[in-house]
Image (cartoon, rainbow, N blue to C red; front, side, top):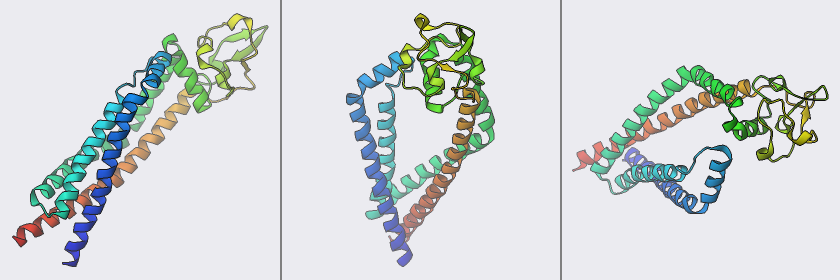
Length: 246
């Protein structure tokens, strides 16, 4: 009886917390849908990246978390065999999908890194991705693809790189075209010399960052899978005791 009591209320409280989390995500998604449209429009204009779908993703994830957690929460507290079995089955499916995802992440991280690095190299020469690449330089504190030597900007026999290569506070939208031997209106005041610039390239920097994130995500998912399997076992156990009881 003591074990059954513990399992019942552990399931209830844990899923109650996740039910609230699901509702919070739904509220956050709805708020973003109406409050941040101008931000999404600005991102689309400046970087050519459409993120208008993000609020719908947040709402969808929140709704899914709410429904699954509601089954576990209510199933435990009212001792509903149907809800508990539904909760256990859904958790089993989710855990199986995450196991597959973990295997892919931990075996394909090198391929993922290579794909990202190829994209960075292509973005460097693509005028349409000008703002995106310079923003990456500023945020990751890197320069060009392989370093400041990636650029070919000279003025009076001195080599320069964009100001994002040395972390200056600038308007990314006003920067010169990537890789072009061109000074905007002959003004070099905002540019950086090779000595002032970051010496690491963005290709290797972002590639390493993506590889690290991919591995860490895999490890986090392993912990989540363990928790979901424990929840599955708890729900199955509680459902079996209800069957025996009645």
